[in-house]
Length: 291
Ligand SMILES: [Zn+2]
Image (cartoon, rainbow, N blue to C red; front, side):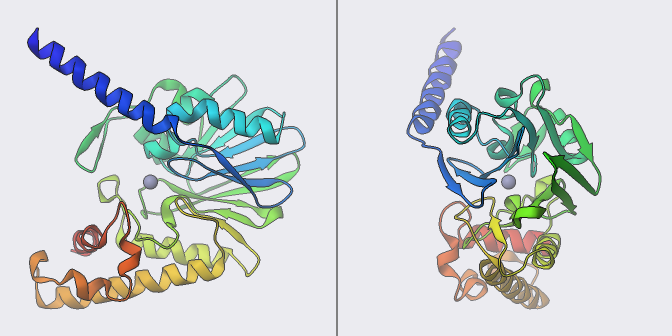
């Protein structure tokens, strides 16, 4: 009984902390073109495509934010939400799936997103239970998929083993807007989820795929961070190639992580180690991912 009480206290205090954390979050729309927006809140950046008859949304952030997200969309358009595209399975991108899921909404994602949402997963040492049925992918694809949204093409392209094993880029072809999911953390070191079959080399390749998809006018929605352009993506690529090359060099002389100097690997990029992935975590990921 005592254990149950303690467990309940822990549960409710954790729950209320989570609630109050999300209570303060505002959903801020950033208009990109006539049809496209980025919604910023907490978790992965949301992309919106406002069609003549329907709305497409990319990613759904966390479940406690769903009502605010719906309200933000309604302030932009009264058209029904018809498509939800997930860039990958992580909870800060799919947590609101079930709440947004209504009759007539189709959830689209890579087949490994469907698989991971339907099974238990490990993430940063934590066990993540399967997502509820309503949150899971309705239409799963292998390599690419094109959606016709009120006559406009939305191209969805899988990139292999990068941030996870189910990443997708979403290109609003007619508007020249690209959502890169978590294959782009603007101005920060990336989280590369090796436990979801993400890969350091694959991550770099994914960034190179994106570089071939954009031009000087493309607006890029990163998974995290502010709206970006080609120059920001090139800077990100330079950072990645630099730290990867340094780590490869260092690993020629040792196979022990503690022998490798974090400062040397991230030199010149220290300010990219703000927040979630600090310099130490970045170096650990590079080491594990290149082993
Ligand atoms: Zn992610």
